[in-house]
Length: 456
Image (tube, rainbow, N blue to C red; front, side):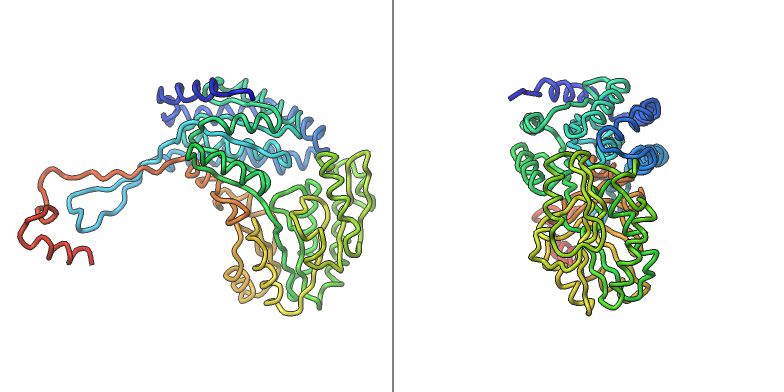
């Protein structure tokens, strides 16, 4: 196995020099990253088209634009985030002052996935840079043109002992995980996330795991069905469903199921036309293995619409399936493709109970006008994050931390949460020397009595 110890050694040495801890250095690095992205924007668009058939609209909206906005937000707020925070002290600490300092971990490893190969590589890198870390970025081998463009941007913007890109497959990831990093950030599947966590444990490196799972979408009987259908179709079928927070399945109230399915079919036609496989802006499946896995689900239940596939182009139509239960193969794993099973419920408590019986999802979506229903679902179900009367949009707000819970991940990022993720919060107590409190020392008269009083 190839060793990358030379790279981690160089980054550790560079970090020890202290340059990355300077706020001005971090701000300049973020500006350089932004300039590099803008300079390579057309190349990124072409790479995303070549790797996934993403349209220019989708490439900018879901990848490039989000990253540029994240950089702008971070540049605007980083000075405030980086300031030491003074905190209160209890009466037992009379004369002392407490502070929390955010300091970088050192060298961070970022393992990025293929579904949003630019955004999910660059967004955590922004947090790592903002916090003052060095970083090694490993993009996905399944999107080689985008990965190479990322490498070009980083090479043109930073020295290797500060920010570096390492390309390769599974062997490369394993070799990197064998090295001692000070922080590891991984986005991908649950099984691989477990391997990453096990590798991090060898060096006691802290980790953030952005995983996935079966994210439910509930359409209640009072939902605005036309709007719900359009927003669900948009969130589910963008990037051909290859989105970690895409609605994985729908629970719709039995009384509105038929009307909702009709609206959903209309929304898909509105977004992708009568023949999505011929739409030049419809995304393809990333590879043969994933295509065949998804194609095997097409016979589950009853197809309401869709179901067409082009093995040569690795494309599958937006497909909606009914007559599905939890024993169907499509319900046994995260779909991560353009297939949408629809289940129905009569009583909301039934749907909540079934969702509670599954691993905690990364996202949950609820369509209803009822405040009572909104609060019931929010309080009853544990999930990473989500939307009420929308899908996916929550991940685009820099004010909302994004991350999973339980098997859908741990840790969060975006905005200040990204800065905090890559920062250790160092607690420091500054004690006065003008006087000394005698009761803290053993053998003092009434010392124990005073301690008991203060510590109640």
